Structure formats: structure tokens, C-alpha cells
Length: 190
Image (cartoon, rainbow, N blue to C red; front, side):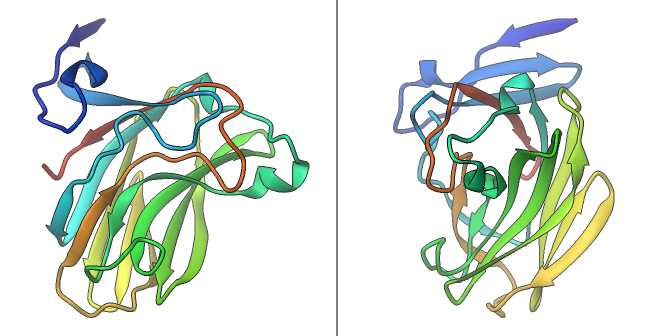
């Protein structure tokens, strides 16, 4: 049974823009990327100093899309994560990415080190399923966890914690969202 409740989160945007869905004991924030946009409606500046980021995520059928150009279907959309090394996210960052390709929703480790982007596929997830995700800062590596499976990727910053800001859902690549996309995230690190 689904119950809806209001969030009490102070942001620069109106609180009415934040929609929460309460299912069991989890409170999800709905992030919406509207058709023709790239940034989600709740993308705000949130500074962080963290050693790990844990969250749950659910996608609905709006995550199924076809790119205008078939070459862009392999682009990775951004899901959730953080910048690092007190720098811009295209210099240093770690986040989950996602895309719909080959009839599956695929999640990725998506990292920038010294302005060099790298990614690694973490696995596929079913539409509508709750997924456990985490990024742990561990010396010179990030440890990404998707539903209990760990994947390690290099980290150029050697600070004990990631210092930067949170990164929220974003569509693209170089294309705009072909239709409105909804993603539900529950941040377990807060």
C-alpha cells in the first residue's frame, strides 16, 4: 500500500517542488527530468564532506527511452553522487550513471579523475525494483556497491573524505530528455 507525505527539506526552490513517496519505511524523493530538459527539478547545491554515500533508487517505465540519434543511445545519464577534491565535478567526482540500452536498464560507476572521465558497467536492474546503491571513498579508490556487489574504480584524490557537493539526476550526453522521466531516490547517508 502506498502512502504519500510531504517532505520538510529546506532548499532554494519551493518546498512544494519536492514530492515524497512513502513505501514501507522508506521515504523517497521524486526527481523529475522534464521533456526537453537535462537537469532534474530538485537539482540544488548541497555541500558535502563524506566518506560514503548510500541510497536506494527506483525507476519506473519512464526510464525506457530511444535517443534521437542511435549513436547517443550509449550515452550515460547521471543518477546520484558527489564531486570530490573540492573541485568541479568534471574534474573530480564519483556517481552512479544509468542508461536504457539493449532492452535493459543499466547502472554504471561514472568517475572523473584529473578531468578524465571513466565508467564501468555495474549491472542491470528491473524497472520498478528498489535497488541498494553506495559509493565509498577508500584511499585511492572508490568502491561502488549495487545490490551487494562491489566494484572498485580508481580515485586520484587521496584525502580521507570526499569534499565537494552532491550531484543529482541529469539526462545526457548531448541530447535532451525525449519525454518526462521520474526517478525515486532515498538518501540513506543523511
